[in-house]
Image (tube, rainbow, N blue to C red):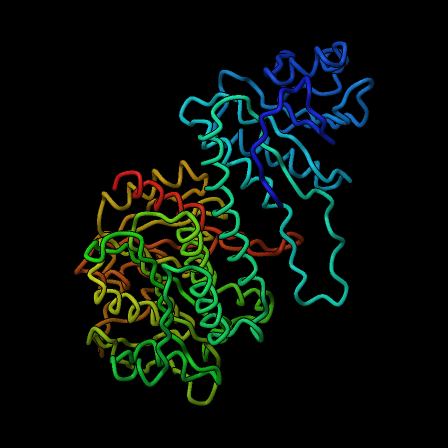
Length: 495
């Protein structure tokens, strides 16, 4: 999809479709008022007939406008203009995108940047429009002999007579985020026989090759063995696919500026190991690498936006399979940090690869470290599929992520990381157990990771409920790429 800035007065505009806002009580946005005057009060007449109420996400496509160079108009409801929330704005714009998705319209002019929101500016409006229009047009065709029909809509012009620079900034940000989300979706949707740890490494190298200030480094199992990553390597022993430790570095600030480090879990398929998962729904365990996909998407977006930051992405990648050499319940392994771990459940493997990656992160002298992982089914039980779980050892970092999530509309909810939970990880035979029992599974998983993050500011995002959807809408969501990029934008603004 192409997104362009347009500033032709509506009176002189020629377009296949004009997108305008209407509100409750038959109120029209400025662009809708202009359209109404150009069409002999057609919009007013439609509202008077009650064909559209103006409620949030109401849409009405008018397929013919007599005596006008504007061929069609899409009326979009935004509810009460004085009480419009950011989520309602995004919901309405998404409804507009879905309406045009099923049409034969190839290009449209969008006048929704003009809508006023109490806490957001026109740059945010433009960014959200780009993200909302891009999302439903994502298609996965890589593994289909007959690709899905190509969708007609190919370009959106964001229309405004003023604020051109602010809107262009929003377009640029929106494109970078949308492309980062699309990359994360695509990599995540690939099956496990294609998207292996080696494939993830190749993707990192490819992304690095497209940007002058990105570099990639791939560590092999022999390298990890020399570093003492016994916890990580214990997981990969059960797979015929060699593990990879992928590092993607973006340099946009001074060389001595401490980097922001993202760590993404990269289990390209998780069968559970010896603690085998149930067969139903196991296909979705190809999504156990969504954290790594988000890291790649966020680093690509940062490079596109040329953010004045240093960022490091670390991806520990493996499969978790029930081979004869796989971990067994009761095995004890030694992590890179020197802590011994009793493996009580081989399906709690994500923390086993993450702990060594989090230890490895110290070598970069990080300002902050943020990991993201489809770590616990308990997070889905606790929070559903709306927010990601957030835990961490630093209030400022966690609050910054909460603020970024509200701006990005990529929700998170903070859970406690209290010392009392650490007792659940006690082991009679090792320094720590890899599970803490049935209670508070998301929290005890983060408690495990916290043992390896004491030397820096750290936050953990459990995206098990938000990284993909099941059922008829099965597919990756690309989250938390919007949250990560918004956090980076906020840090860049403060730099």
